Image 1 (cartoon, helix red, strand yellow):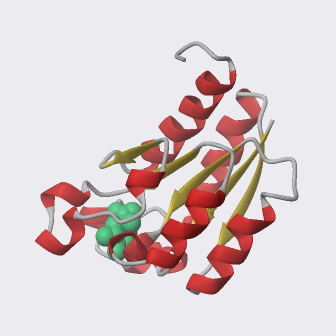
Image 2 (cartoon, protein in one colour):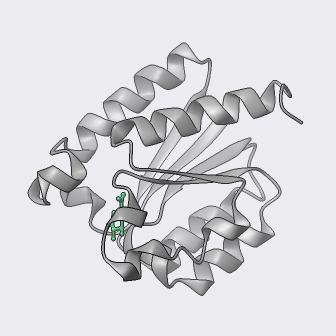
Amino acid sequence: MKILIIHGPNLNLLEKRDKYIYGGTSLEGINRLLKQRAKELGMNVEIFQSNHEGEIIDKLQETLENEVSGVVINPGAFTHYSIAIRDAVEILKVPVIEVHLSNIYSREDFRSKSVIAPLCRGQISGFGISSYILALEALKLLDRNIDR
Ligand code: DQA
């Protein structure tokens, strides 16, 4: 079972961002934990980070050609306004889960709107690194068909 994990803009510099909001773990640290958990779940993960909207869209479109069973995406600030990423998610045939380290509903008003989440299977927000881990586990459960 292959899963694509996408980290959006500024997540490459996580350790330089507010650690009270984002937890202070570097992206490398997050990716290490994700690979470890994926292995335990019998998943093969491809991890991609970009600061560029178009590159994220290209990566999402690639899943139409590849054997990908699900996508976990933290679109960063694109969450709140990228109709182009929303449209790319809409085309996909596999479940997409939007994740956020912080709880986007407890912050500035402009962060409490996601234009992408309505096109996703679900959203997990506010659990730090565990948001990503929970998304992997949800994809595994969906794959086992236990909740349809
Ligand atoms: C974020 C929340 C966004 O509002 C913000 O722009 C980010 C990170 C999160 O993971 O909490 O860059 O997606």
